[in-house]
Length: 240
Ligand code: MN3
Image 1 (tube, rainbow, N blue to C red):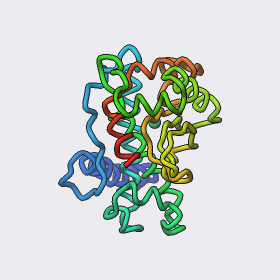
Image 2 (image 1 turned 30 degrees about the vertical axis):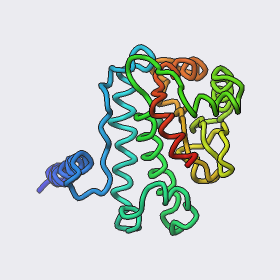
Image 3 (image 1 turned 180 degrees about the horizontal axis):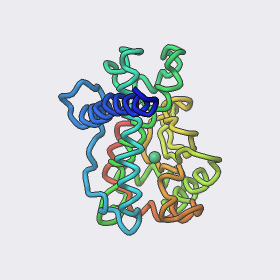
């Protein structure tokens, strides 16, 4: 066998091994009956449903590729940390320091990413923003003065986050509403012991195709997608 044949044979064998692996990963993530404990949740609306505020291509790549990658990484961690597939997600996030050190960083990043994105998709709705109502409306006005002021605070937090992260409205340990940002895929549970009400992804992948470097434009446009009914339900759960 020539060197060329050897090389071709080697590459052929590698490809045969790699391709089923890739498909197995996708199938597992899409089928709750599969071996993977974690699955990519379907969007409750189409990839084009949030146009023109968030473009179809961004939604598609963000959900199918970025979120899927966190899911795949989690399924690769369950054999190293069995509790990952057993404990409720928010319980793990709230006690991230108790996760074994050997897997703590990947759990932080990928479980955080999975939680944040699931939360994010559910926080948006087609057809334009609904209006804040009931207890959440009262709490926002009581804490920030007005909805405009809250939006200003969350925009400020999002713009001040250097690099990648999230801008949050959350209920803190003191049961009061607060605005802050987190780095990377950190969630409000981790360092603030807080429960999220509204979260805006400020990673470049969330806006770059449409807004390029103009994060402020994205932060302004994003509010038109907010599902206030979901935010009100988040507030009720967090304030309980
Ligand atoms: Mn994202």
